[in-house]
Amino acid sequence: MENIRNPVVSGYFYPGEKHALTKMLKSYVGISGEKEHVKAVICPHAGYVYSGKVAGSVYGKIEMPDSVIILGPNHHGFGEPFAIMKEGVWRTPLGDVEINKTLAEKILEKSGYLQDDALAHSQEHSLEVQVPFIQYVKNNVRIVPIVLSGSIDSIAWPEIGNAISEGIKDYQEKTLIVASSDFTHYENQKTAEENDRYAIEAILALDEELFIERVSERNISICGYGPIITAMFASKNLGAKKAEIIDYKTSGNVTGDYDQVVGYAGIIIQ
Image 1 (cartoon, helix red, strand yellow):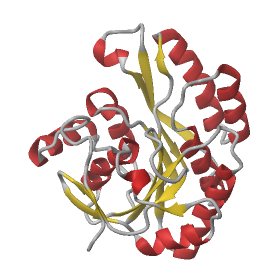
Image 2 (cartoon, one colour):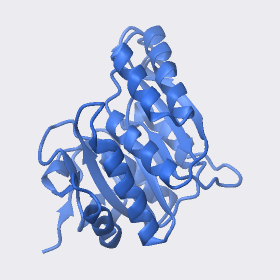
Image 3 (tube, one colour):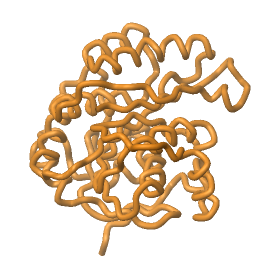
């Protein structure tokens, strides 16, 4: 029996009906000119009404390859701490997306941390909300879902980042890495913007050690620090030389409530 990962935040974080979801995605994903070839992106994973414009500004700018590795934090704590799902399909209102088993197995065999575990993915929204954007931009794309949990200075991040980059090299086909993360949680607008800018400067410098240092120093509540650090290691191993911020907003820009905001950044790494 095929392993099907059914959506858990469809109709909540984003529309549960195909037509409504397509219409919303069309409003967010800009039709830019020439698409950019990138190694990795950082995109938010909140409800689309809050973070969809930021995510769409990134997905509308890049050339989408046939395979996408999605890294997200484990908000629920189910399953293994470093969990890859190596086979099956992910279902969304736009249809089913197949897991790239060949690429997943190449990554899995190169890491001592990653475990094949569907349970860790069963309730996690951070990867799920990326999938409709990816589907909308390109039909018949395949994914490799990975959820990560652990301390910000975990020795797992460079190891998993290396396993991803080596897996991509062995696979020998263009592959995008998506790090799914929101930034500051539930601070006022001024504090959120200042802290997020401080952390983003380190990402734009492609300096993961500085990122770890700055997030730790200010205790910045970036939920996907593991995916971001891992993506930085992997993309640098693949030859990335620069990063660029595409958009930054907070939930306050949507709700008008600037006392308790969540920050959303869209970044590309080339």
